[in-house]
Length: 418
Image (cartoon, rainbow, N blue to C red):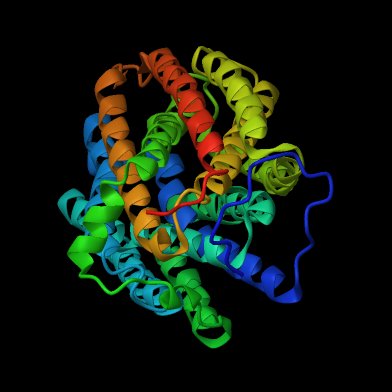
């Protein structure tokens, strides 16, 4: 169902219930997002294996992470002008096929340059997949439901940790670092077949699309003053994950002296808790308001990140508690922010808006990864130095995002007439 005029973000003690078709759509989108998230997240725990295996420094590993984001940013902008001209299902399947090809190339890459090129291909398609999925969410679900939908989709982060990352680490340590990417390509192919056979067309937006060239549509969407508030908020929101996550496994292994064999247990416990807490936080955002939920989650995230980045030789149980809290607050921020910003664009601009927003987010994430690689360095002992500086940078950007999201919160009560 479409909502041409966004519903104000206000507390709702009795949010509407899902229909059977909406439940199916949520499950499908969450499963698809699982493979996209896993492809990105598996690089973090593989960092401790990849760097010595390919004889690369943290700067080069940071480039492996950031090249995906930069490629996704460029392709998202190029695709934005066409995003509202087609059935969103077909648009989604085209880019998902390219994403699977890139992931397969990662699994076959023999050298660092080959891996870098494969991540470039994966990013060219993967970033647009997420934008298309979130455009579908905005088309199918009213704002009063989107907190719960985003919460379930965000739980794919937890599912990727519980089901994918431990298996990925096991395959990498017992076989080769290529194996996790081959696993993702296989799982993703099954997801793609499922989408082809079961997903219904999503084309109601075509009735409201104005006849104009892709270049003009891109320009109007990209230069809208209303939309740029949401763009800036999502750009800064990306810095946390892209700065902290790429070096999290190396920080855990070398600074906290946790063995690689215990990493799967850490990620599994954190993932299970994320899967449980994600939908709960999404439900709370629908009931108490998405901006209020975002502010509470952001405040908690700042406290947890500052504590985490200053840890040294922490016991294993403490790392588990901190990881659970950190991922819970990140999920709360992403779910509430994603639901709120989805109400900014008009229905006929959603595909372009989501593509541009995803591109800017990926670009900001790529820059953040490069900066993180410049800030931290690995001492001869293996210890990751200057990690606390990352916590400070992410905390400052979190405060800025809270201010931008307040403006978004005010905008959702105003009809999008651009």
